[in-house]
Length: 503
Image (tube, rainbow, N blue to C red; front, side, top):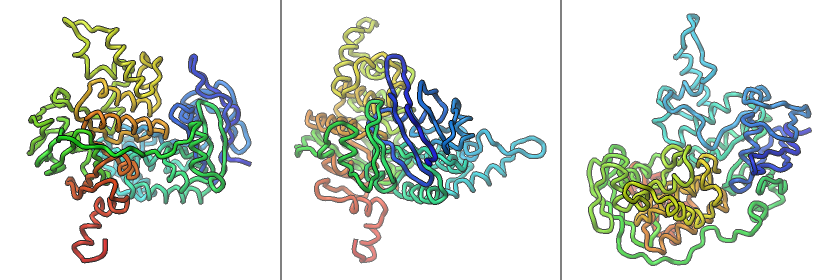
């Protein structure tokens, strides 16, 4: 008998059939991967399981008995916990407060027992081998560390069914390895885990079975010992994806972005160049300073020294508006909080940085603006009928496309992309890679930040490896490997050189 069995689940939102008679089952002590392109229905099914939305039809059975799940409280009562792709935490509260939220310990006088709260937080973090300080404000941590806090909270609830939605998307390799250990422990304890990820190598390393959805329908289920990644990709997208990272050689032109001695409170000094027609990727572990360098160039943080030239002209913006005026665009790491206006329409989000193009005497030329926005949406294969939807209604991959479309419309000469495919399905990844290549061939200078080493190597011409706030190596992408990049990123290469040991 299966631990969890979902049968005939359907859900409609207006005219959109998000789920159409899908099924899914999970055994105790099993990792069952759920895969599909963004918009395939994975998140909708998990929201139904979590009690965040109600199904229109179908049944949910736990241990063979019908489960009536209409709220998150119902889900928790049935032993279901979810680690969300988008952080579900309170950044203005401490780590300990987040871990005890809703279950705060009190003293005999009825006041908060903060000492006990800290002790409990350390115990919860210890279960996933994390040394994060419970007294720190959550918002002061990196995205990866915040994700680890959410994982610690879910693990501490002793769930029988645990949903992990892109749990390693924001984690460093070391953090991901620690999570894998936790997953092994939970599997041994009989916990059933639904694993949602777009990373094929991760799924094959962790999962026992995989189920694929496409366009809100059930496609099939198979044991990973019997099928291969190519089979799953074909099930996901209805076509064969050959070489995800393939691109013809590019010819670099003049330097469009020149950085010399750039430093801020946490990074530097940094020197780098990105030429017209070139894709340069900054690689390194989380916390190495890659995002901080991007923010300094974009004027989002204050520089303490150094200078930046854009196409030979000094760029000294005091804020992002100045950088945009100089021809620089940035798709930030955290699109939800920094890159999009979630309650505004797709059209508003795409056009926001280019409004000066569509204004005459203080009046917006709305037809012209919409035509321009629709053209960029078409380039990125965003559904044109989504133009009036609030951008928060889009899937994660389509939100990322909307963030990119904003800068395509602005036609920036220098484009910085921080984790451009995080949480994006394999089909959308390929489309984003194509756009990066097209932009480079159109003479743009593209600076990419990526924690996905195959991606970083595969889409770029050069790699800049960062460690402890500085660039420690510059490598030709066609002549390097993941192993070499990691040696520099971890400092092992330098240590080997100093000790005479082979690198």
